[in-house]
Image (cartoon, rainbow, N blue to C red):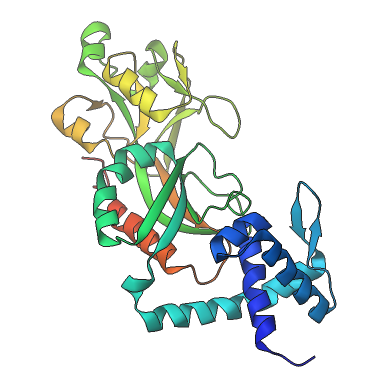
Amino acid sequence: MNFDGRILSGVGVLAAVVERGTFAGASEMLGLTPSGVSRSISRLENRLGIRLFDRTTRSLHLTDEGARFYEAVVSHLEGIEEAAGAASGAAGSVRGRLRVNVDPFFSGLVLAPHLRGFTERYPELQIEIHTRDDVGDLVSEGMDVAVRFGPQPSSSLISRHLLETRILTVVAPSYLAAHGKPKSPEDLSRHACIQFRDPLTGRPFEWEFQRGKQVLPVPTTGPLLLTDVNTMLQACLAGAGVAQVMSLGIGHWIASGALIDLFPDWPDETFPLYAIQPSRRHPAAKVRAFLDFCAELTRNEPPDGC
């Protein structure tokens, strides 16, 4: 089989279908009709002599042969895209639509206040932000990148560690005035502690404190069980109870005294923040720009939230 430009064109369409998860998504990405995408894939299958996709009315999946072919060629295609982007200039290549899956807490407290600067930096870029509690399926949902807290399970997705944020145990002055101040973490068993549901297990997160290698678990209870960090913060600010929160994005409340860090002598429990993208070795310029922007934001956040 002799190589020609039609194969390269077909591989580009193949990569778009894999990235978007559907022919319709690839057609939108490439500016083709869905039937044009289907014809291009059929021509590539005929030239290769293999079936690339198992297709039904509701699903689209690479065959084993298709997956092997895709893994073998995609890095070469991305190298071509990378070279083309570099040749045309980095700023000029940051354009089009960027679809981002973002943790609601990070979106509201850290990302949103700086979005104006990002859009002014890249005026040809349109950003579509989806806030949700889990990463979902980036490929089938057509997402370019996600920003999530917590350890990331091993998968075909590429995770970039952005930072470790401290876990603080905080309370409003009004709660302390009504109930007194706990002198040690163990005292929290006698206080109203706002519980937060772990979306992975469905159970409340367990409370623990770390100081160096010492780990102290503390059983806690309270009348509130929440699933939204912003609601938890507002309830805590209103004096509803004690909360464990990430320091990222709440420094102004600590600095103003609206929230009090109860146990600064237990400073070593942390929670990671990751940027996640589909398994492409060389991300598009718009994705690289957003990842660099998130890294810039997190570098500017004080590590202790103050």
